[in-house]
Image 1 (cartoon, rainbow, N blue to C red):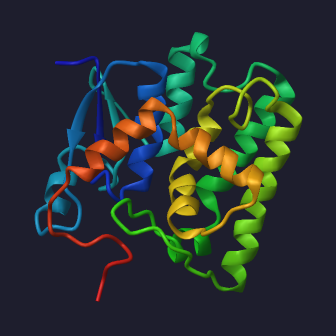
Image 2: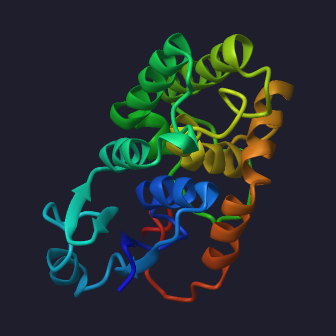
Length: 219
């Protein structure tokens, strides 16, 4: 049995599953993938076998169970400090944790108006007024991180951090639904999508042929 098992849902639309998965892949932390198909009659029973909340993702580390995405990322940061999952600078780290937490708890209208669906054809989809304000807030956060701490590379804090992992599903939303993006937003979205970890996730999502609909494909 692998030291780490990460339980996730459908790669096509399980945004929370993407976050720790892409972080572990990028950091080259070996793990076994546990998969639970979502939106089936058996989903709840299958989730109950591996998740104390009935949700994914869940990390099993040699029998120690860690759930909730930010908790998993913090746990990995504690185990692998040399991986720099958070920025080393105290101010940058505080900002990274702030924007990551804001993503975890906020932007509901963007998340519901632009649900992650990697098989949806790209095309602009307008948000309501609140969703548009939240989209602008996301772009403002990305600009602040990049301007203050992003000089060392194309990501929010130069190198890939937990903050980038937290925003990875939002990156897919901007790419799918956002239409023509501001140049700096487009550059950041492209940088994240070009990482080997994200390309791997997309490739595996494309192989999913199950009939359950994505969150924006309901009748």
